[in-house]
Image (tube, rainbow, N blue to C red; front, side, top):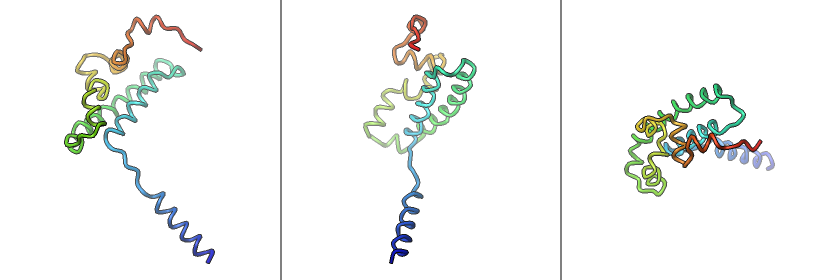
Length: 127
């Protein structure tokens, strides 16, 4: 009897843990954008490391932005998330909107949240 219960639990655990995780195109885009922003704000990276990580993230973001822009399910959706993402195009699709504005992606993001170059030059480190 005990062996039967253990076998049942193991089978149930295997089925539950093998279920695939689903992340849509917007969730993947948001995850990669968050990673890029974390690289931008990481004080432990030197300039070369930061540029390398942001360049890698930029390539991934460009691909994910294209996927999201071509996603037919998103075009047909009227969910609040989808509406918000497309309403806030400038910050949602950083690579494309930065290219359209002629600025680098980090500059575009920083200006999008309200920080200018003079603000950054006048800032002091709190370390």
